[in-house]
Length: 212
Image (cartoon, rainbow, N blue to C red; front, side, top):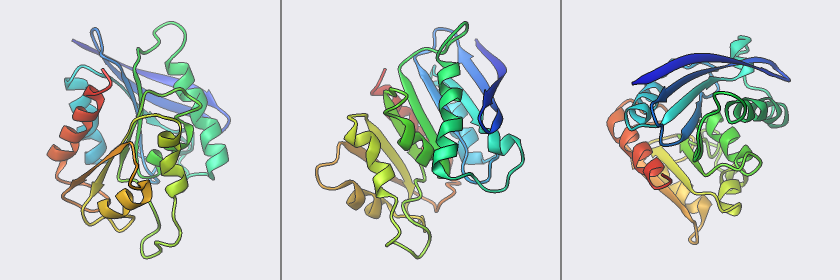
């Protein structure tokens, strides 16, 4: 049996929406968020949410405040992170708080915010879906510093990346992490939006099971 509820959370950027699916005796919690579209409609995100719930994990599927407000672009990292922190903190405290271990996860821009805030939120793991290592055609504009933040904090990191992702191939992600990486990179068929979702879900479930 799985219960579902909508949690509205006040943030500095307005109200965020957390769509919480919680199985009985949940094995832990994954807080999953969207990319730069600000929407929760992507087939890849929905497949990961459903796959994790089926595996016994509580999933808080979060539309960040800027997405709820209808903004077409995410804010800069500092205000975005400041609005993300109270969402996760609210879900993990008070009556009805979600259980640990805690995994922060997101697609693209959502993966960036998960990496940047993992240490502050004392996350037990970070699951990145299509991490945008650099803008298309601009490998010199690297976001490796964000990707490395969980690793440097000793937090397990798993990146699932499309083989032809113009924002960074799996090989580029592995190079950015370095030879001494304590992270996993799974290459799957696809580009930045992963449409063949079976291997994506399998990778997500395999990762969270290492934290259970």
